Image (cartoon, rainbow, N blue to C red; front, side):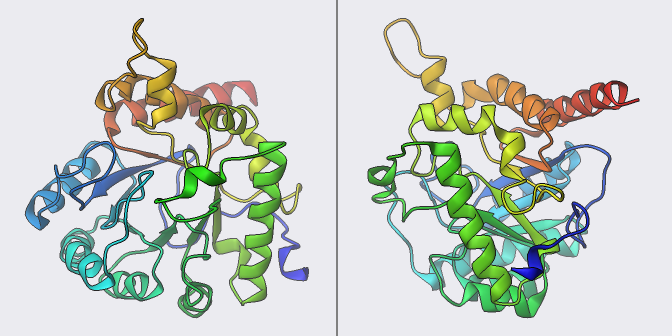
Amino acid sequence: MGRLTRMRAARPAGLPEADRCLVMGVVNVTPDSFSDGGQWFGADAAIAHGFELAAAGADMVDVGGESTRPGALRITEDEELRRIIPVITALATAGVVVSIDTMRARVAERALGAGARLVNDVSGGLADPEMSALIARAQVPYVVMHWRGHSVAMQDQAVYADVVKEVMAELTARVHALTDAGVDPDLLVVDPGLGFAKQPEHNWALLARLAEIGALAHPGAPFPVLVGASRKRFIGRLLAAPDGSPRSFADSDDATIALSGFAAAAGAWCVRVHAVPGNADAVRVAARLQQERFA
């Protein structure tokens, strides 16, 4: 795998540069996403929310038209395009750095044409065999997430003997497949896939060893790591009430901020979050502490 012999860790070209972990704000143009389904379903509402996230400090805005919550059913490609293209066009035209959250190559291609700069694929290229060719041809940054199947049945696949080793091995296999297909490794970002085919204990184990994830293919030149912990169920379960009722999604934002600070200190390239201001503060605090630590 000669293409993986990388001289240094690279921040993907064409995306914001900063001496800290980046913040990606989420715009779910869906009626059924786990934390905010329906809030930004209409194009006008989604566009306004994207501008709000950017104004609040998001370095990028991640636009998605298909829910990937556990148990979610897929929508048609045409419906996904109908939802996201007007939103991406409006935000990108105004200068917002947009990523497209999709598993479909045709949707990704149309989104890039509308101004998106990054493809965030929760399947890591497994859901659509055309995705790797598109990324190789387009030469755009690409997020490779750990994935074991579609939402409707993914939790059946949450079985591991050693979750960190297995996630790293499966991500490495995806990185190899993509680079063999002609994708530049310096454009790849890896994501451990918190909450996707993972039980709570698996998510916590991956977070505790986050610094290892980016080094999965070449310890001397780690890949940038995207962390998507925001409002996920494993946080709500940790913060459950005395009667066992999980903390609500929106009421998990403070805990998400704590995790963003931790992820940034552990070397994450970017955190993907629903509520931007506190998370933007957390990554800046982590950066300042790291600056002092390595002074």
